[in-house]
Image 1 (cartoon, protein in one colour):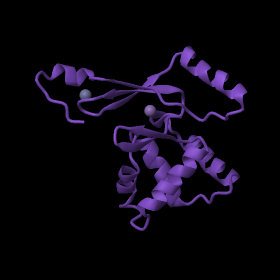
Image 2: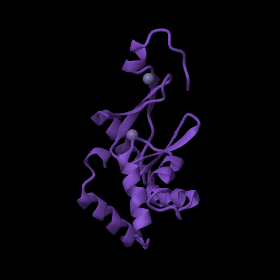
Image 3: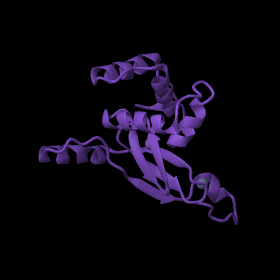
Image 4: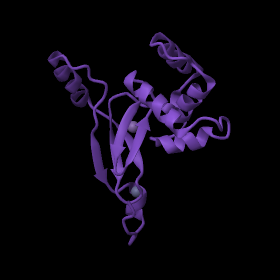
Length: 152
Ligand code: ZN
Ligand code: MN
């Protein structure tokens, strides 16, 4: 699932998935889902900040709990990039290109070779939800800036 094309339909599909697993679908929970898909690899704190104007009563702990549920249902991915714990609404197989200067994280679609990993893992009886592949380097914009120093 990709945040750029999250339609009302997929939002209602997510709501249905939550209901099917016995979770209550509240406007607060759906605001967390929307905030996840509206930004690129947000932290729980960033999502909390985004929804706090609409839902000032929602605690950071509630945001974390909801993100945990979304991760367990395969709606989100949990990423540990650098020091920060981030979440990803794109659960299609993809790698991350991470710039060591500006910290920018870009999705990179994986070839069929990368996707084939799942087919090798699943016969072991392990239900694979996602896997991480991080490629570190310097992004195009940072390469263009001469003499800038690393900040990450
Ligand atoms: Zn950069
Ligand atoms: Mn991603």
